[in-house]
Image (cartoon, rainbow, N blue to C red; front, top):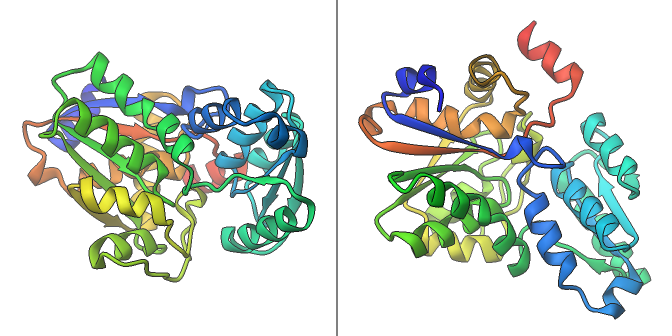
Length: 291
């Protein structure tokens, strides 16, 4: 709890600090759950994933934990903090292309050519089940919470949040937030069909041009609302989160606060959980943000 965030949003605010996880992000929950369930054949072939960083760190961490080789395809522009972390965890990192979608195509091609077990960052039931435990823990610890706000890139975290929250109490509101500079998941949810959109966001954790089918199916059924915020609003929220929580927060990790500030009038008097999805901000990003 941070009284300053209560004052800024007009709500009772609880922050779920996924930035305190071993890889600095919520994704590690899904990676560990999925890799732990792989059969011997899949483990022997090794795993491959495409990522701007946090999903890749999750897969690399889980692969090391269970003795599986891992390859991560990332954009050439990937956050160097996340790239170094993946390498430190023992993964081979292939940097190619400018955006996540370039890396995804590269990983899919390599998986087909070499027989690796491709771990999609969204269309994986075991991954979604794993990441949804962040909301399960939050509601077990704070049963009075009536609203959960969760950032959305591909949508695995939001899908998991929806499943966990609605299983505990169908009246809990789950609100997603995405950058308006990369709105494919929002447009797909709103129009109830998969929609691609330009991907120009600076927030790499929210960076995708194409939506994921499984998270979208879940969100269409269970997500109560979806908010778009600008990258500038995310940057402002990131600075506030770093100052008020005294922890490192990356842009995607502050998106939930950006949404809460935008929805201030609607959240008055509510008890809300902000899913701070990650804290893997690079020194260069931090310097640019704080001047």
